Amino acid sequence: MSCVLCKQKKFKIVSSVDSKNNSLLKVVFCKVCGMVQQDPIPSEDDVNEYYSNEYRQDYKKTYVPKIKHVFRAGNLGLDRIRFLKNRGVINGRLLDVGAGGGEFTYLSSKLGFMSQGIEPNIGYSSYARDEYGIQIETGQLSDVNSKFNVITMFHALEHIPDPVRTFGLIFDLLEKDGCLLIEVPNIETNDASPHNIYFKAHIHYFSAATLVCAASKYFEKIDIVSDSNLRILFKRKDVLGDLIFPSTAQVDMTDIRLKKKGWLEYIFKGGGYKKLPLRISKVFIESRLRNKQGLQMLNEMIKNN
Image (tube, rainbow, N blue to C red):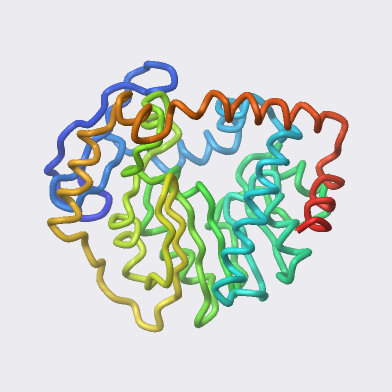
């Protein structure tokens, strides 16, 4: 296997076990560019089939969103809309890629954007159309053929076999001066539980440097927030360029961070000791939502925003 970014074959193994179920899963670190990825990378056909039919059941244990998932997605959606608007992205035609249950698409459509989404999972995309009355197509990014001013992609790129090709598809769908807001887990964070780092659904594990690199042929970075997740706002380039690879120092930093991951770092430096009280509080808050409907809840969030 060659690296998905630099096409070299100089790897070292960072994990051999799926952290969610202890099955075999080989994850490697590219010693040339710092990319962390599964080995081998699954085929696009296998991935499309999995996300169309199995992923939501495997990781959410449900075929349609539970009300707690709507609550979480709604709050995240409002935060992401604020992020865009605080950076001058306030309206336009918007496409949400990997739209899930449609919460962000609905909220953004009520807060200044002309929004639609694409979601591979049949249950979640059907829920979005039925519950919110929004335009969510069931399918893949490659099925889209319209033009947009803004494209968003939240926790989807890490599931896709070829991130560079994906940025190319997005480039073709954006109008000149269009923006892309993307969010993925941050492999360099210290607050990810060792039970939740390497697993089947995540094909790629991005640092800020490798995410910017994967986009660099088509996009330039405008702003970045780097914590547990990486949230980067990109602007479409006028002229295509070459990939800009991470520096040696950036590759070395990722290598150091991978070596330091473990229970001690997570519990003490990553704040893992705080997670149980927070989880108890979350369970209590979400237990009070049982009688609500998704549309009702999102409309209340908009009113209180």
